[in-house]
Image (cartoon, rainbow, N blue to C red):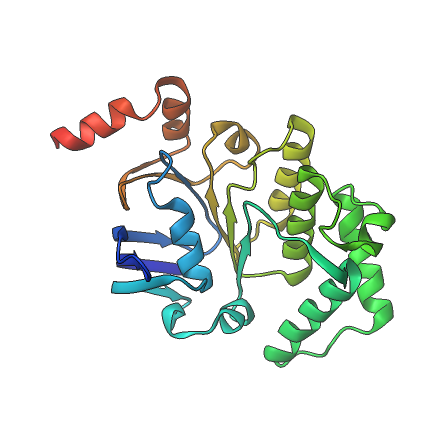
Length: 253
């Protein structure tokens, strides 16, 4: 599904190297988690994959189902099936949540050569998926994320993901700032979307999210590289002991 090979990335304005040779494969149907200390490059990786401005790829490749992601515009990556749930979802005053969702869904369906949803079809679908995420009808009527709590914003991101049905879902610290109940709802939304033809890359600081979204593989990132990979038990090791032992082990290798 997602293949990243020796990816090097620098900040365009400063020239500072952030990613220093990331190599990562996420097969179809799998959930991979990335953990690591602050400043290790986790969010930068998500931004570069989604096509955010301000970064320069100096070396390496990233492909989605064999298609070169780095040659695509952000909207082309979205149409190809890539979705990024933001750590800090932005507010869009003046744009209704329902209007935003229907426009996004039909734009992607059109790009894939599929029929657009009618108003009735869309309404039925969005109500069904909003209910599963405990999003009430009033939230759907409000401008995108305006006046939403942190938990509501994150649930709204997962609703967008549920509506767009992407092939490759990247969650950039979606658990940041969530209480236990909100985290459980977000995790339920993610787990409901797990499928043999869909993959997830979950970026998180905390093992507690991975109690609800059990990953197939956990990767530890440090100083712009993946330095260790393992099963879910690796996240438990980090929770109990921090990163010091892992980083010392890598330094000695």
